[in-house]
Length: 351
Image (cartoon, rainbow, N blue to C red; front, side, top):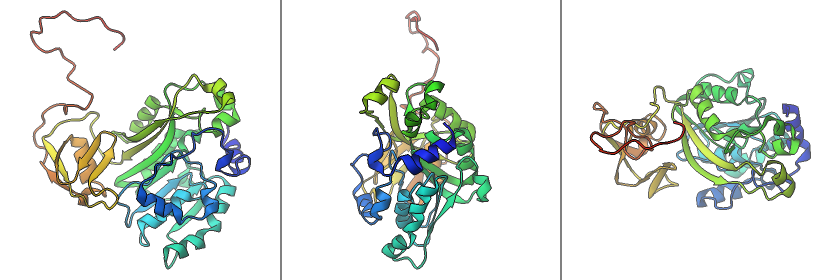
């Protein structure tokens, strides 16, 4: 599938969310309470042309500068516009003129609805693989988001490289996309419906992790995920042998993060000061921290919290001068057999 084919599918074939043939590009109904109120203020035409697969609204956004890759008609941009406040800034980029026309049409509506003196969001026509053509400066953004768009890109590695370039040190890419449990056969990528429905362009999850690390995001963190239900006999017949998932990841631009969870005797205490998460803070699927409670963390997690916009919401314990090996419970252990086990090695498969 070419980019022109994708533009045609999202600009002319799809006229609204109801035209989608699977649930790949649909966000579940269970939205956080604070976000329901934000979305209620967005123009109905924009809500009706939403094709995302997850939530790309992280926490602690006041005053933040945000870039939305593949912003479409602008739903997430306008939600972020409200949450960053009048002094924050949101830039949306999309290649589909029809979608951008909808986003531009309601700029004044949202500026007035939010009570801002002037718009804090702008929309640019361009390709997310070639953001340098838009003259966006290096290290410009605190946050980059994307909602079910990476799978549509013909050069996913370039998108991740550009995201890394545009993030400030300590910034993050927080995005949702569709992933497969295996590599999708190349022949299926030529099917316009499978590709347009965010399936045949989906990355095998392990290939995504490799691409992210190669781009500089050393420790990708999975925030949440859900299996997709194709619910379409024709599509099921073509690609139903592959399992697909909608997943949200956060990637921090922090230099020299380690490839594994290393223990330096450090811990954090969440202060309970993030308005949307007063009782517990969820960094990712495996790190949920109760307010006021000491929470031991590996060196990478410590740095993600201390060197990002999240730092004011935590107390930090330990300077990391002593290394204690692999952090227990991280899924990786010492590869050597313990001494004097008295048992013979067990046969196994590859690796």
